[in-house]
Amino acid sequence: MIRTVVRVAHLPLMIVSRLYFLAVHLVFQFIHLFTSRIYVTKPTDGILMISATQAVQKIINREITSEELVEAYIHRIEQVNPIINAVVVKCFEEAREKAREVDAKVADAADSELDELVRAQPLLGVPFTMKDAMLVDGHIITCGIFYRKADKCNQTAEVVERMKAAGGILLAISNVPEVCMWVETNNKIYGRTANPYDARRMAGGSSGGEGALLGAAASVLLVKNKLMRISEALSSRKEVSNKKNRSASIQIGIGSDIGGSIRMPAFFNGIFGMKSTPGIVPLDGHIPVATNYKTQMLRIGPMCRFAEDIPLLIKVMGGEKVESLSLDEPVSMRKLRIFYMEGIDDVPLIPPLSWDMRRTLRKAVGYFERKYDLIAHRIDLPLAKYAIEMFLVSMYVRGGPKMSEYMLCVEICYKRDRLIRELKELLGTDGIFLFPSWPCTALFHNEPILSPVNFAYTALFNAIAFPVIECPMGLDKNGMPLGVQVYCWKSLELDGFQKKKLKEEYD
Figure: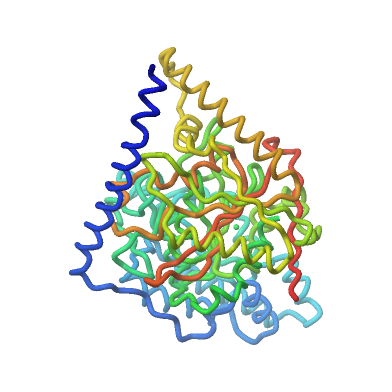
């Protein structure tokens, strides 16, 4: 009887759902007809348009200095931050001092010593930014929490130490939502971060400040493997390369992801972002602290503007454990198996996949089919509709639940584990899964309040602890970034995971 009622009620619920989300979006569009669109303009300084990998080579070749690079990014941040409000802590004087030390070291080194210098410090002289959720000795790290606004740290997160030891120079710390637990970056201490492509729209969360800085070319690095070369292949597509990033204010940065907190800002701001394999990049010094299964869900990883920087960053961040990923072992693109899924359908709480997002996914699939003579397989994963339930149960804090709650958790965990097995068997060691980044492009500020579970598209794969990368795919007709997520299978056993890096095969 109950099942019959549910089946009968489903269709009208879906109709009401579609009308609701359409009405919400139309209302916000109407409101913003009366507000001017402000966006960050493309940088004119050519030094801002090179990758971190290229910057290191230019520094050791003495074509540029680290101080010049740092000053260029400081100027860019000062230029764009009044628009995007992404930087919450400026480390400019410390960065200038570190840059001068690097330049003195390079100047004093003999030519024969430079290669060894770069091997020891592969990020030599390159500035990076990080989100306000990782400890840095001597700095105030709030995680968007008001009562932490005056507390200075007395230790530094392991991943930040590794970036510095590799020669990276911390330039700034970026904004996050309160406790890093919302899809839009806004808090009572520093306010709201805006999208560099349209300041009326969200930059995402919780690494929203990082996403906006990178999208505005105010940073070189953010922290992003079989996924790395795919991102480079996708980013090289001619169909989307005609629309360049108009902004950009840093090359690389460090983000973290427990429900899409790297990938959503990467998508909304047109950059690369990677949620890495569990157990590779250390979580020490991250706020909030992850416990139980959340240590599988939470990942610290790179965000960056250039795909070629991702292998470099993941090696620096992962340290010795990166060897288990077999990143330097080539795999032919033509031997891959491609699978894709066009969103999460038939869930009243989640809006339908927009046409722009569907078309972007199909273009990515078509690229692989044409470029590498592959046959892509469209699949349907019925269990994906339980994405939010899987995420919430996986985040569940133990505290003596009632028997009914306990049984519900058991049922959802069973579905989660079954989905893990299905994807593991489907993808094997040579399968790639393409999935939409979100139901639509970046929403207007406050609009996510009325569509709060859109993050199911990213949270699903935190629940099953898969590695994933967000790849930019150009801009839509309104000039907002498009993208696609790329997943591959992983073992849930931290010591047993072996993964191959994809090899580019350009014609």
